Amino acid sequence: MKRDELIQKWLNHELNAEELEAFKNLEDYDALMNMNSHLQAFKAPEYDSHSELDNVLKQIKTKKTKPQNWVRTALRIAAVVVVCFSVYYSITLDTTFSTLASNKETNIELPDASTVSLNALSAISFNKHNWNKKRKVELKGEAFFKVAKGSTFEVVTKHGTITVLGTQFNVKHRDNYFEVICYEGKVGVNFQEHQTTLLAGDSFLFIDGKLIAKEKEKLATPSWLNNESQFMSMPYKLVLDEFERQFGVQINSSNIDTSQLFTGGFSHSNMELALKAITLPLHLSYNKTNSTITLKRD
Image (tube, rainbow, N blue to C red; front, side, top):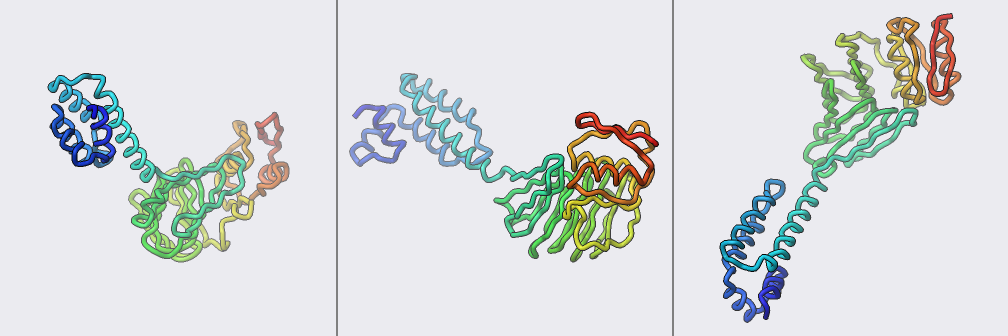
């Protein structure tokens, strides 16, 4: 039997007793077995495929075997490496969900039957293959969580981390804005040097680095789940930012004071009515050009 055929059958574990003896008599038998021991010890991701290929090629040169006879073997090694890395990364990459501006909320079920509702321009990611060991979600934007009872559940944002066991709560994480509202159960909040525990109706709010006191939350769920945005003594800029997210437009507010406080809200279902809801109370007017809205003082 030809040398290449013996190596092929060895790679496929198909050698009979006679063929095995012939294989052992090959002049590069030791190099082949050394290569095999490296492959058996392979564990992703520490396996260095480039280094191993270099070692094999060096052994080929020292044995003075024909280069063309090793091309197939080198390709097989590369194929094994690719398959192993593909399997490894398929179980380590995070699952990500995101929403666009002016989208209705997206509802997601997590591996433990916990649920997440995502507001516009928001995203979450989690590792479903490691979920039983660590229930952790990374959040950008705003989301409402209904957490099934079980081990510790973490929501990680750029500004802070929320830790719970089983509860319902809302997290809003935007530029210079971080808010957690507990609707049921108990929520632990870790924000910079601040650590606090929230009970049902309690809120934790930071705006531009300042802790803001809020009244007890009376709603059973966030208003945005009912297709509305509500504000209580909030800087007008935050109202305009939310309007832009919900309707996918740009607002030019350069001629007005956006630091003034606003109490009120708007519906996400009708932009014209929503505009009136956020401008009339402050005696503002507006005009629209394509997707840009310019506000001005009456």
